[in-house]
Length: 566
Image (tube, rainbow, N blue to C red; front, side):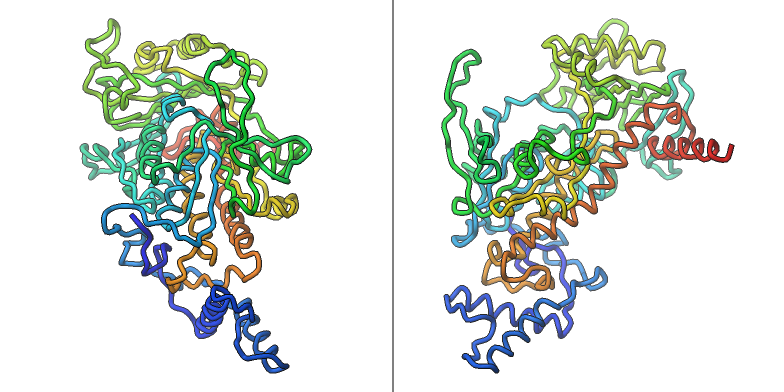
């Protein structure tokens, strides 16, 4: 896949006003003169007062051209709105010789997606990952690709992945009373076959698939040699914000002493842009804002421990393309499809026979469950730090779910301890773009964060991976609107000439991206944090046929309003 030359990879076209057309004309003249080395400004009028006045007018027109409102946009039918078209041989385009290099720290979903979407636009990319290899990381748990966020982003990456669709979401109390349901299956004309073999880029419904399946699909589409394993970021004390070092592990032995070797030193000369996609404990974020970060942006513990498990599906009505939730006013169990294959895409051993006391069968899709309950931070860290934590956590979950309705007990007892893990839930406030820019010194102005490095959130809204994918697509599009990353032969029709001026246009592109990312993700962080509180409170037991977190939030707010009245 490669970017569409009709819309310059934007997926949409606009009709320009006369003022915007003049601005685009002056910009084209300036770019031509810059690339020819003339360096005389936007007008070749010669010297003198008249020439200077013409230059000033040209710059005024360019800088004052208004940003287009959404009503000016129309979808590009050449690429069906994705910004991508098939390349002649199905290969990625050759990197542009004059394109500045982008280096990405972290080969998770956000980092891999950004690398792919940049390469599809002819940008030179290097991707650094501290893992020794792809299989070093645990197989990962399930993701829900939301139809209006992650699903759309995947289509703009040219990815079509098979996942499992869910037709309804049903909530119960711990004593078996139904609290509410919503989804396609609640409609009168629902087709029972819906949800089978759904693709993750379909916009019709949410789709569930394993995290590592998505990550592998992204990494496999990158150009050979893009991903550099066993390399991570370090910051030498005393020179923070001055330069960054990528360090390589020389020995895999856990008990050997070794001196990491410096692979490369980052500077404005070695690459034009550094992207931090290295997760909630991001080293790049630390470099941008320092270790002694203000309380407003520090790590925030949600007060909840999450336990995750993967098991074989059951021949039970609630295990067929459905999401199941059980709450008791304190703890919460969330069950969803994991993958369409019985072995969970290689995660589970084949279930060759039924287990005594359960209905485990081989032909059903694999399931994933998430159990969460309030716990203080010290105890949560203690419980998850042991190498035997899988068994300890599973026993704790089984004990807390005693007497809960079917199929809860069967799912839990059929889960093997090696497929169980847990972690305390942390998040951070999103750094406001203005604050982030104020904190940066000149040497780090071309450093930017995406995904969990920028806006880590609790898992209770299922938005983390979806927002990371959107970050990747939107950052790539912002960058290729600048002359540093845009092909010179492409005449941009999307009307973004007014977004970025000549001097430091990459920094302006980053500012524009960070503003859009903050507007989009800040609310997701807040609502995910609220959901962590509401779903583990008596408000979660309220009845309602909509998203359980929304029902719980409404119940909690109504109770608070009643308290004020009283």
